[in-house]
Image 1 (cartoon, rainbow, N blue to C red):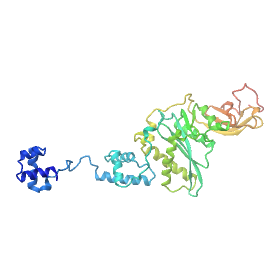
Image 2: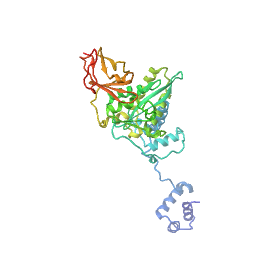
Image 3: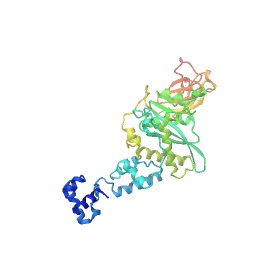
Length: 392
C-alpha cells in the first residue's frame, strides 16, 4: 500500500490528525489536504501518485511528418538511394516540412520496423580520415564491374573529386583500357580543369611500375604538371571514398532495369551522375550536394600548371623514315622523330600550339613540334635544324 493511501486512511479513521500524519509520513499539510480532497472525490485510487508529464507536448513530431518519414524511407530504398536519417531530414526540409532530429527519425523508423539490425561497427572516431582541402586538389579514379541484361560483363570507369565527392565522369567500357583512361581523363580536364594530383590503385590501366615500365597515363600526367599518387598494394582503404562510392552507384543501378547495350548503360550512368551530383545530399558534406561543395571553393591547380587548352592524343608507330604523319584541318603533316626510333610505338599529345611525342615503352620524350598550318613538315624542336627529303 502506498504512503499516500496510508496517510489518508490514518486521517479519515481519526487515528492521526492532519498535522501528525504529515509529520509522520514526510509530506506537507497542504499536500495531505489535496490528497484528502481527491479521496473524497474519487476514493483511494485517486490518491495514488500522478505523472507529472504534460498531457500534450509542443515538441512531439506531427503525425503527417512521421508518416512522411516512413514514406521517404520506402521510396528512397525502392529507388536504390541512400535512406538514412540525415538524408530523410534533408528531403523533409526541401519539401517545407519541419525536420526532426536524426535521432527522432531513427526512432520513428525503428517503431515502424524499417530498420534492419546490423553488427556493431567500429566507431567513426577510430578511423583516420583524409579529405582534400580544395576541389581539383585530388581526383580519385577506379573502375568496377557490372552486367548488361544478357549477362555481358562490362566495366564502369569513375572519376571522383576527393574534396567534394563530385562525380566528374562515369563511363561504360568493355573493358576499360589504358587508352580509355587517358582519353576520359583529358576530356574531363577540358570540362573541369587540370587537377593538382590523382589517386588510384595499382591497376595496369593506371600504372605499369610493377612491370618495369610506364604506361600512357604515367607519361601524360607529368606533361600536365599533375602529381600521380597510387595506393599501397592490398590496401584499398587509401581509395576509400571511391570504393564506398561504388556501393552507392551499384545500389542505384540495381533498382532499375538492366541496360541492353553500352549506349543504354551510358544513358543510365548520365542520369545517375546528375542525381548524385545535384539532387542527393552527402552525409560527409553536412547535407550539401557534391555539386554545391564542388562549386563553393576555389579550385586547386597543378604545381606547374600549363596553359589550359584542348588536348588531343594519338597512338602511332614511327615509320621507316623516322617520322609519323597526321591530318590537321584537312591537310597532311609529317613530324620528324628520328631514324633511330623506327618502329617505336609512340603517344602524341597535342594542344593548340605544340605536339609532344613520347616513346610508350620507355616514357622518353622523343620530340616536340611547333604546329605550323602553313608547312607540311614539322621538325623536331629538340634537334638542330636539318633537312628532311621532300620537306617544304
